[in-house]
Image (tube, rainbow, N blue to C red; front, side):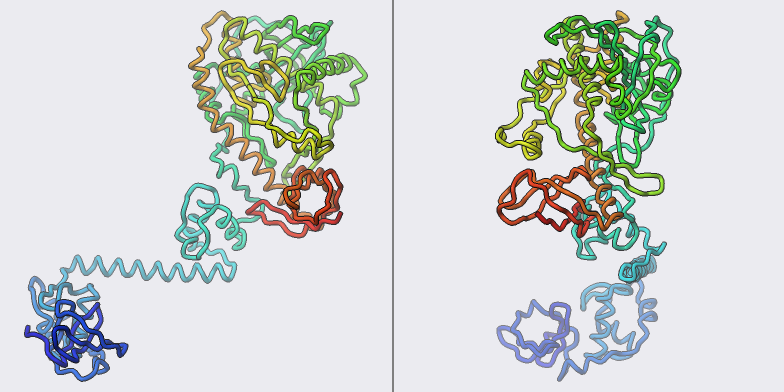
Length: 606
């Protein structure tokens, strides 16, 4: 093809241009009326001209499919292609032919060397374009459905990827990106609620935390044929919150001995059994307001839960205390017990009657001893959040009852006694330890002081060597009374049963392996529980949009105040005018709830 002259039609950056002047560089006119100077190598000649105006490049009708069929297997010029399609080679037909090449469906190449795509290539390109067009149409329809708050079946894939982000199962969603929304679980959650794809009854936090929410279904063996001490003559009381479904400890008092009977889970779940491995993967029961997901099969609670049958198999611990509260003797016995179940409220009404009166006096001695060792006592309001079958969220305050202290002190002293026993008999166990609290203002009193103490507490940890548990005021401590609920408690029972039967126990490295394997999962369980409670508390406020109540100012951070709300068991963070005093009561009225952020706003009046 000849060198281009003035009036030639050339290709420049995928658009047509008209040569106006030739020198060391070429002056070319672009479709927008702009003239630029370019090097000859920056252009491709489409037609030598003469062309007087780019406006003359009018669309043309031709036979591109006929040309495509005739030119199969050949290499040809733009002039040949233009002539075959349009019957002539002019600036207008040259530009029209080149647009077909650029389109890429039928032809490909440069103005000097063009080839026709084979049928397979053409069909593949055509199918891809149809799919893209269908996708664009589907996306446009999805946007329209969002605007109209409509949930359509054909939009399922878009909602699925948005839902995956909301559940923490994916980091990105193309739909969120195209909608200009943040790639965050909160943004996805908000969109799902706004579109009514989710409602407030969807709790995403167990999935986000990565905890297992299905029930275990492993089979359990029969109870082993072994001697058990008959303790059915003792009054054994399983005291728990009303509605509890997994009673795994009970207390008795007999002639100076404190007995704590614990569900004998290790009798059915030996180390490395299928049920043991399943429980290890879960770390603990998952307690959600909408229900409990156990770490052991439901059958374990049905067969071992204390008081669910007339008699129950237990691993019973008995301690005798010295006058100063120190642990004297410890007995550990596989046993049969007859258990009566009580709520904390029912037990509170019986504290003046034996055996609870004796147990209450004993618990006072134990608590005094721990306080003398600088245990950290925190008394802040607690509530129980529950989702009823009809979807109603209820929040019930848990009163500070002495009966709770009785049970707590009994469990703590058994944990201390087991730790001492393990050291004496060289039994590796997962010990619970906690360093002293961070510094806090000791002058603070009331709820603000309790709040500051709780903030100052360091996280407890599990380890294979005994160490002080500062928060409890104990020199050493092992959690040993909830083997149906916590995996490491189950490990303690497995070790103790092996020791009592004269069988080999797991060594320290195996205990450390178990501590490590449940650590992250145990934290995930606690996170799922905490965030779920926060979620359902917000749902409660949505269900009670006119809620009013009282709060207590417990923290001041540059006029950003933390307000404790005892009735809800939660906190609010509000800016208040300076001069608001710690421990001062305030009146609250809910004004808005942001469910995806688990935040509620209140109107505050001092």
